[in-house]
Every structure is written in structure tokens, then in C-alpha cells.
Image (cartoon, rainbow, N blue to C red; front, top):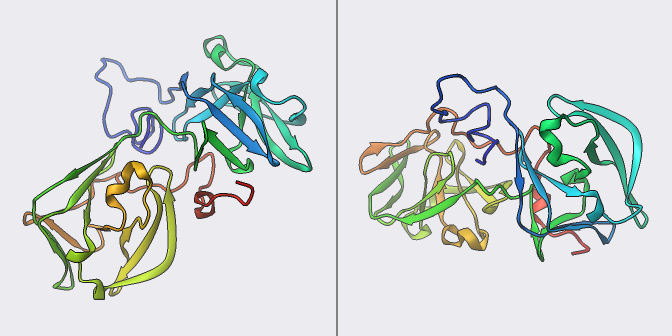
Length: 289
């Protein structure tokens, strides 16, 4: 979860509420400086490089990075005849992005008739994330979308007893689970392989990825599809869960100190956004990296 996505405070499915006497507008947009150097790679070259990127948080969307025109390489953007109208930001002009022999139709856009209250976006360009080769903060590639500064993950060691069962068979039993707290979501409990009956796990050819945790693999347990998962090589920031197994409490029985765990309504992870699709291939470095 972030500020405006999934269950964030500016999203349609917010889990909390603002303590104000009057209801807030259904759509609140928020912009703030990224305060990080961001670069865009396309066609084997850097086409944008800026330390003045602005992030736009829009309900139901991942945060979007807007670059000053001056920080985009000359002759990279070719204005097209295609225009759209943003419900809050007015007329939007679209560009074909060109670099070397490569081009991306509608690879970038700019809001060209902004209301006065959105002047921060004046003369700024956003690039369609899946159309570009890669985005970087400094020299590290950012996968999926611009990192949301309001998305946080904390991992804690616990000594509580976690027992996982399926059809009366014990799948896992541990007194050393690790719990992962991710903004806006129910806690997820991870178990060392040594505390899991691995004969009950059937690997499946299914992968997803999380921009904050990395590539995720899955297991079936008996007839329970995708009942468990693991990050075999989690990103360094969350490396403590690498190789550990987590179980879906709405598919198999997961008990913590004898209490049955259930996901709260609205806690299902959404793997793609309204503004772009996320694919496993994006978690792999491109050939020219």
C-alpha cells in the first residue's frame, strides 16, 4: 500500500479515515518532490536525468514521476495528435518517445491546460513506465513503478506458536515465525523451511513480483491452489524473508497461539494498477543492462 494505492489514505479503499467534520472530496491528488535522482533509459541511452522529479499521487494509481522538460534529452519527445482529458488536470497531450532506432508511441504525456491549483506540474513530462526500457534511482533500477515513500515494510522475529493445517494434516509447526508488516495490509507470517513438512508442498509454475520484495514463487498444498509462497531471493531490504514460506490463511488453516487467522476485508493484494500492468518479466534486467 502507498499513499493513494490499494488501502492508502487517498485511495477509494482506505482502511482508515480522516477525522474531520465534513467529508473530504472523493478524489484528492497530492504532489511532492521525490528528493532522489531519477533517470530513464530508452533505446540504449539515458533520455531523462533529474534531481527535481515530482511525484503525483492519484487515487487508484501508483505514484507517477514527472520530469522537468529541461531534464529530458533534446529531440526525444515528438508531440502526437493524440490528446485526452484528465478528470482533474485537464487537457493531456501525448508524445512519441524516440531514441536511436527505437520509438514508443504514446510513451510520454504532459498536462497542457492545468488548473491554477496544480501549477506544480507545469512544463513537466511523465513517461509511460512499461514503454521505457528502465527507470533508475542513482545507479539502481527501480522495478514496477516509482517507489512510494509512504509504503513501509517492517520485519520482526516472534516466539509465538504458528501452526498450519490442511485437511487435518499439519503442514508447518514453529515457535520462531517471522512476521512481515506492510503498510495497510494484514501481517504476513513466514516460516523456516526446517519447520515445514516439505512433502506437502507442490511447486507450481506461477510467479508474481512485488516492487518492494522481489520475485515470488508459489506452492499448492493438496487440492489447495496457491496456498503458500516464498521469495527465494528477496530484495536486500527485506532479505530476512528469503527462502521462508508463508501461507494464505483464507486457503489453509493458520493458527497463531491457537487463534485462527483470517484476512480482513480489503486486504487482498492487488498485483496490478489501473494505470499500468505489472509482469514478472519486469523483475528481470533487460538485455542491455
